[in-house]
Amino acid sequence: MPRPQALLAGRLVVASHNSGKVHEIGALLAPLGVEAVSAGALGLPEPEETETTFTGNAALKSRAASAASGLPALADDSGLEVFALGGDPGVYSARWAGPSKDFNAAMERVWRALQEKGTQDFSARFVCALALSRPDGETQVFEGEARGVIVWPPRGDKGFGYDPIFVADGQTRTFGEMTHDEKLPLTHRARAFEKLLAALR
Ligand SMILES: O=P(O)(O)OP(=O)(O)OP(=O)(O)OC[C@H]1O[C@@H](n2cnc3c(O)ncnc32)[C@H](O)[C@@H]1O
Ligand SMILES: [Mg+2]
Image 1: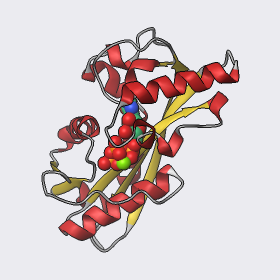
Image 2: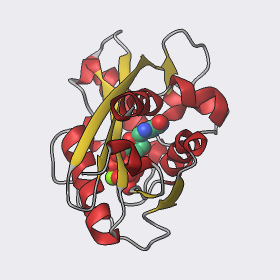
Image 3: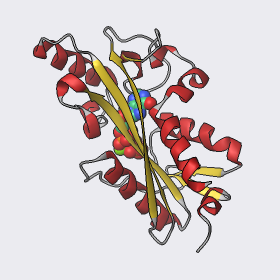
Image 4: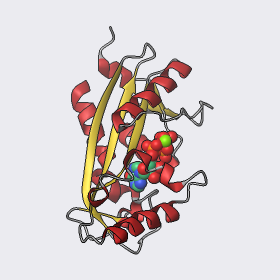
């Protein structure tokens, strides 16, 4: 059996169709000398996310991409959990934006739901599950989180998704106001990636 770190030595599929994620994962992989190619660039289909957990959906996406390409694949399933909303939108974070991927509407829906609760608890976290699969289906999954609060109105036009309404603990600016280099080390994604690297070492 090849040693696990061999999976990160050559060509690797980044099994995501979200350009914001592909950019961030590409930056995490760059220092390793990995040749990362996105699922979109390979023309791979976007599998239906039928699981109810981040880890389940990440594994489903990495397995599908690895099987279809014959290459190791790294998938990311992530989302925003708002505590006062019982963890919503959670694994449905992408679906709250609808087929047109309207994140202004999704952010408004989060804020409206908080107003309807009448709560002052704006605590939230981003969660990221990273799954690494080999073409034979063997898969490892690692999870990271970034804790913070929801703010309104949205601020900043950088990043993607829910970034303009999320301020990470210890920060004053939203992820949407930060550059890629400022945001990345604070993310759920970078923390999941640290665990993956530690496990492969
Ligand atoms: O499944 P893939 O193809 O990777 O792309 P996706 O956008 O559908 O990704 P998910 O199914 O994992 O849905 C996660 C959603 O959560 C949001 N999200 C995840 N990480 C985020 C981050 O770092 N900043 C802002 N929003 C984020 C973002 O809007 C995503 O669309
Ligand atoms: Mg998705």
